[in-house]
Image 1 (cartoon, rainbow over the protein chains, first blue to last red):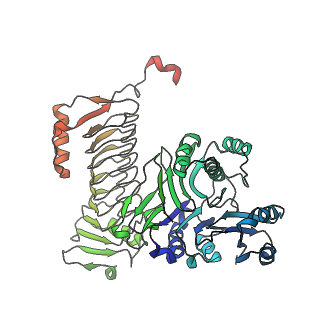
Image 2 (image 1 turned 45 degrees about the vertical axis):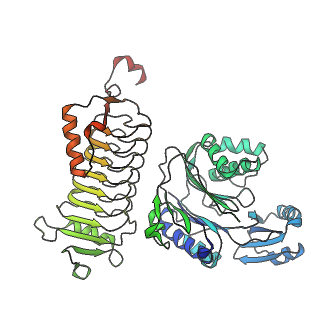
Image 3 (image 1 turned 180 degrees about the vertical axis):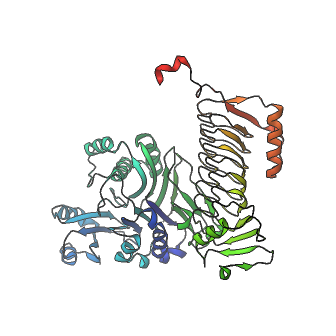
Length: 292
Length: 238
């Protein structure tokens, strides 16, 4: 099972409503994934700042930590988004890696990422999803198959700056690919198959591939069944495996491109009656990018 | 029940899923007596709900006014069901008899395992259209995705556009007619001569589906019958 919701806005009119639209889509997909949920949202960024979304396993003073590095922190339950100057990002990251109670959920100029155990509605409320704004968002409701129900095992996964990936399906060669990627210096936090797909794409992007090229390469190297929806700082991509047994439907209007596991999750979107609805084809890379 | 029923202008009874439950809709449609005079129904606000208008055994007309979710019109036995939008996975699965008309596109496994009736899809159908079909006739006015008529046993699949990879894979029997191109044929599916009987069957299905096309423009595919007959030379493979 698992449910995917992705929404990429083509124009700024809907940006203030991004969070509430994503929240509605995710809640409809509760039946497809009631054990945990998560979402990445690409909001405003500042050119010389880097945002770290962090999670702590116990009470932690994120404000004090941010201050030490001359940054600022916004608190969202057990998550916090800490912004620091780009020049200090490397030393901040080194400090975080020395703190065992801290998990780095995502890093990037614009990405903020939140995940938790529970029903999608509870997870969304916990982090105030409905109040969030941005250009694109990717969300996931999980029914665990390949690894345990933990916050770490919830989607999305982020293994590179401003990159995230959600997955419906399961990969059969993830252990092999993980071993190869570890040798290439990609770090993994879980035994989850989806994290391997995220790491694979991050590795390709790091080597200079564009997102569409990286997705094309994934068709050859990742074995299993999958619908992937991926986000980058300005881009949004979709890929389905050649057999495509996992459900997918997309809607495109002048204002947005949306992906969902089922049409029900698209039914609330504005202008859906006039949208171009289509089922993404197997083995075909779909990719949208917004010029800044 | 009477509260949810209201007569519309065109003498159809309207069932609004924004105010009544899907379970009530199906229970009501499934319990209509054979002699009912409420023979025409409109379902408003389907919004992609699953299992819409399933298991109907009375020859009524049901017009679903919007997109349908999984298994719409499943197990239909005699009803005339129109989906005024797209249909998700498994539309008209296991239909026994009747007519199902999708005015938009259909997702995967349209008409799966169906034993009879006619399924007409105005748009495209995606993967595994007519998988394990057992007597249904399916007319797709657009294209079909990969593995159309996978393991089909009986009935006809008519594709007015193109067919994707592995058409007719592991075919037992069933007739496949394609007007456009075929990306590849599946195991044990081959091109056949179009017989006079094939032409009659195809012309009848095109006529019933409102397709204006010449039977001569279609190519007939069918089973090579090498896969499902035991052959002693293949004994080692069993």
